[in-house]
Length: 207
Image (cartoon, rainbow, N blue to C red; front, side, top):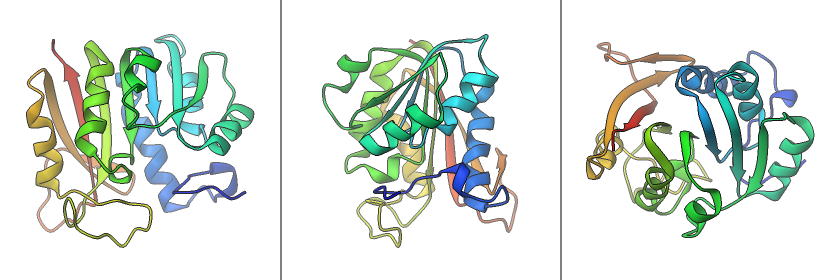
């Protein structure tokens, strides 16, 4: 199986794999916010969509998993089928994406921001597609900053923590809470001497 980019395929990994645990933890973190019509942008192999649909089946009306890789979409459709989940191919920066997908009550975007050339446009699309009262849960790894090189071959850049938080300042309609992820755990308050590698924002659209 040859896919471009970074993909988590649980069926090919040991349950103790650190990266798998981190990715699954983000979906567990987001579960309480999931309701109504839900979008998972850059859904990859589809395990997250399936996990969310099973856990939140009463609160979930429909879930749409979108990825730009047709092989990933084919795999997700085959391996992680659920009656409330639809998988679609799409580009996060496509200017027609909001019109194609419609609006959502919950949007999940995990480890995608660092892969797109224009993170501001990407966030514009997500905010546009989020219904008033809806929740966006979005994460990204911290790094050297916008426009700076990264050691990860599939990352365009990795924002600093300050840049990640400042990204939301342009959206007064969003009420945002920030968390830091270290391994499978999330902390709102920083602990002295602890290095946090990833940030996650929970954004509620107030209007």
